[in-house]
Amino acid sequence: LPIYSIVDYNQNDLSRLRQYLAEVNSLRGMKPDAGIRAESDGRFNNPLFSGSGRCVAQPATQASIVVCENQTKRKLIVSAYTAHKLCHKCGNNPDVDCHNCSANISLEETIGDEAKWTQQAVESMAFDPNGSTHLAYLTTDRDSKAYVGARRGQMRPLVHLIDTQHLGKAVHNAVKQASLSKTLLGPQTADKKKKLQMELAKDMKCRAEMEF
Image 1 (tube, rainbow, N blue to C red):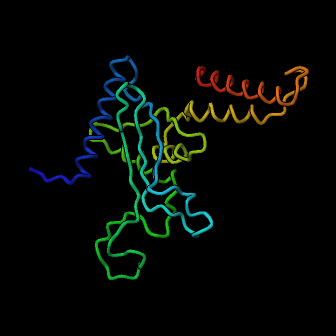
Image 2: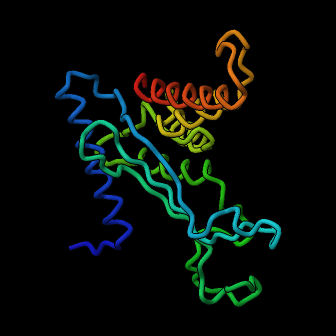
Image 3: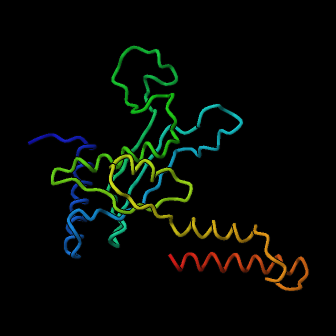
């Protein structure tokens, strides 16, 4: 029997889940190459802003990108990629003797390159043994670069969607900071106008989340 590493086993399992989603599409009457509806986000072992003003490099050494499907209630993980600079032999000294380095990116690389890590995660989907699977829709944060990386990774049409949580916050902040006309709120005191504008911002946030 072949001996699989943990990484190989995990990749095979993710491939099996993607083929399951392709079968779900088929059962729903969709075309075989309809693609997967998914969402993606990245996390780092340290906040990227935590070293601001104290070090020239980003303080994180590990980045994890997860792509989850949005087609079933199970929200299965369909792809993932972890970038890290961890090696007990290298440490902070790249001039050590040649060895089997456990890090998969160099110390000089930007750990916060979410687009690059998402591209790596999406590219792995093209090597499924039972046929290539791809993303049709990808939901991300409003300020995320994951969509750019996903589009590079599969080189196929991809629709970018913004998650309602961040969209609602963006609408709320925009209305709260907007300069409203005097006729909109009527003759009110400054304090009353501020409270009414806050209520309007909350209402617009709820409407945006309900609409999408």
